[in-house]
Image (cartoon, rainbow, N blue to C red; front, side, top):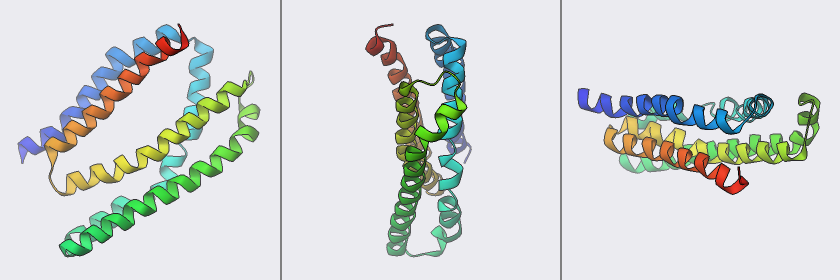
Length: 171
């Protein structure tokens, strides 16, 4: 039991230290105060999707996962994932089309490129919904090593993408 706990715990520690030692210095080196503020505003509004679209998958899984047979579990998991993706896509579409109206009102020095950044964040939110449900399933099935590997892989891919930004933009 203790070994499994550490598999769920240490990816968070590595993410935190990696964020502090890698992501923050990299971001603050290339972005100015105004750009960080704009990214913050965009992040806040794209993050609205998460609480609105995750109103039940983990609750449904925790309530019914151990009460169902193996065949019913696969059906339950499929339905939960389908609902999670559908609800997330609906909220993303709503914000996708609302973005051109509310972003210029919120950002004083608005540029059309900010809408592209906002929409990129929204696309990432769609893919993130699968990880939330799948990671919870790994916890339910006590697959700590796989969880740790997947969580750290996701983090290292994000760091890799962060380092590609200056290369692509020429900074």
